[in-house]
Amino acid sequence: MSHASPEPGLPVGLAGLPYRVSQISLAVRDLHTTMDRYHRLFGWAPWQVFDHVLPVHHATELRGVPVHYALRGAEVYVGALNFELLQPLEGPNLWTELIDRRGEGIASIATMFLERADGDAVKAAFRDALGIPVSMRAEIGDHIEYYYLDTEARFGCLIESGSGHAVFVDGAPEHGGRNLGMRPMEMVLAGAAACTAFDVVLILKRARQPVTDCVVEAEADRAAVEPKVFTRIRLAYTIAGRGLDPRQVERAVKLSKEKYCSATIMLAKTAEIETTIAIVEGDRVPLASEGGAAAAAASS
Image 1 (cartoon, rainbow, N blue to C red):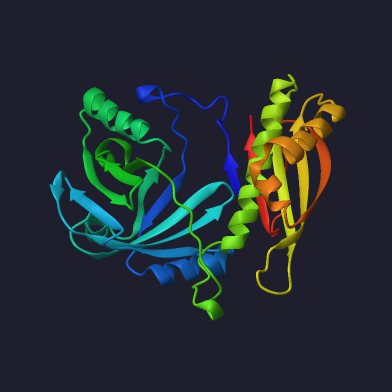
Image 2 (spheres, rainbow, N blue to C red):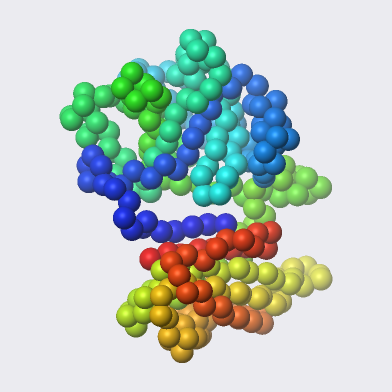
């Protein structure tokens, strides 16, 4: 499930930016043992496990000095919060230092940004206003940077930030995958759901409707033989607001389907697309339904 929201009312901090807590990370010695413990006790799943190693994980620095280090990570979403386990594999790094000094435990709280310019603005603001430098950084691929600010003495833990975003795509083990992420065709369906969700919110805003949330859940049937294209797609729209006009909501969904949503219009070349609409009086759509093929949420 993907969410996109400017989060109205979130306080603004240094550099004039909102600092949403996007992730909590623990430094651990044995990632798989710890991951299994959280799964058995709390039921948290599914986990995505990945190795941050060369050449994808590169430009690694520790306290401003280029050094090589690598790590293994595991992530799981607990509601909207990303919970992460980090196991250092080799090279000098902050996680090994933390484990050696005080044992396993919380290493950092992360507040991430999509734009590189925002990440750079945070570095400059902490350096200029508080004298806090970047203590460790690296890049993942061509578009993602993460870095740690030297905040442990003042804040009790490291503050992680950065820019860019990644999506994990994988396949079934019987086809050579590791079952660590969404299937490619699930990603296609999720993209279509997200595309139309944003359309609907934008159209309703232009119609001066008090829309506050929109969730689109998608399910699909595929052809029995190759190429196994989508043949039928069901999009269930749940739209929240206070005093929404049902006619305007129906119009927004219709315009998205027939005129604006490039993803669903493209998929309609092979698939029959059915829509249902539910309106919720309130500020948010309760996300009680999980386990569908794909779901996307867009909030005002």
